[in-house]
Amino acid sequence: MIIAIDGPAAAGKGTLAKRIAAALGLPYLDTGILYRATAKRVLEAGADPADTKAALAAAQSLGKADLARTDLRDAATSRAASQVASIPEVRQALLDFQRHFGNSHGAVLDGRDIGTIIFPHADVKLFVTASVEARAERRYKECLARGEPVALVEVIADVQARDEADRTRAAAPLMKAPDAELIDTTHMNADEAFAYALARIRALTTHAAG
Ligand code: DC
Image (tube, rainbow, N blue to C red; front, side, top):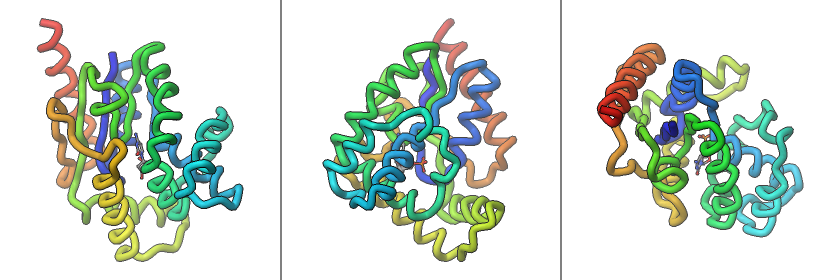
């Protein structure tokens, strides 16, 4: 079973996808990590995240240790991740890994293009979103919890900029697959979003099986 969970930055996809994977006994892949780890390698090499050659070399050299890093969520890496993610060669280089991961034992994958490009025939596709304000406030609280000094207005601007970049890029832009189920979590907490999504997945898969 492949469950594709797409949506904009800070919509709560990661938390949701992880819980769904655990509930269904499926492996989980946060595909954003691939772009973040690529970006981190580029930045650490002192290269430009918009440079195709440097970004491709970084994507091709990713190993397990890169994906296990815990320092990939800061603002500079997030911005650079959005830049490397707009390069078609980088996306192509990361495609096989994602398909292989899913095809091995089934999986829950979250990202931007899982239901549109990576697994267009996924068993279930969810498009998880929330208002810009709600998403920025969640990201703001995460930053504070990590001890990062940020201003809410900056986080809002950052979320808006990443939305715009992810939606308008030519290569695999963020969009809802026509057959994806829309889940708006603006007025849901994490537990409510999880309960709702799991119920929808059960309904959709029972329906498909029957
Ligand atoms: O989900 P995230 O915030 O960790 O993603 C980091 C960046 O990577 C984000 O700007 C969009 C990009 N991304 C992508 O283009 N495709 C994916 N499947 C996952 C992430």
